[in-house]
Length: 163
Image (cartoon, rainbow, N blue to C red; front, side, top):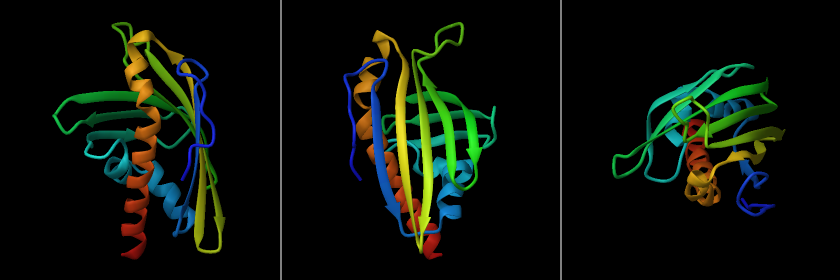
């Protein structure tokens, strides 16, 4: 896995990742969209997701309470914009909402799932569309956060596929 493209932090900051899994596309897509599985891998290493909602349909709600190793809860939200199971998923992720519910950080995340033989390759693009100064610390951790999440996704898929 590698970050193929990086830009300066702020609006327009974009990361792309490619990752190949030794599992069928339907399984990888399900692990990405089923909240029971999503809770197992979402977020950096050491984080848990005691609250995880992901409605895998256009207009569907996303809400995840990521809990850090120190017990700090980092709530995030979002909305599913597009689904084409098991080929494509587009959604927003949001964080740092103000009192009116306006996010201080928002990204549009697009994932394609390509199957060849017994392997699935995903291409993920995450593009920041809102970034307030208060969100810059989180934005700086976006690349390692996605990298660690995808490593955790790989471990979850491997466990499920070998069962």
